[in-house]
Length: 94
Image (cartoon, rainbow, N blue to C red):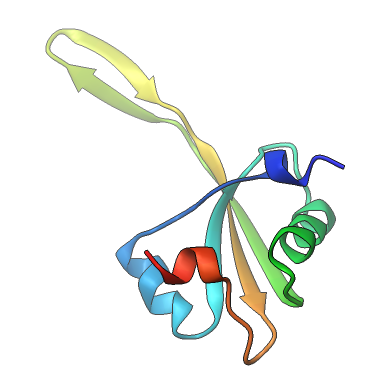
């Protein structure tokens, strides 16, 4: 399938770093992806067992640069809880 397209990138923020200690990882995912597709993609790409997934759609935010206005694009975020004792190595090194 197209698992590489579902998971866009890992989110590296202060909150994500705190959640990583509780075995929760955050990813930016495709807006059209549902929880079942996200779970399959993470399990196939990283070889881990997913216990829980929470998703949220973050809205576009207005931005200004001088007189011109526009919007910063919104995205879908997935918080993924892994089985105890498992890690995602790509996110670990950052």
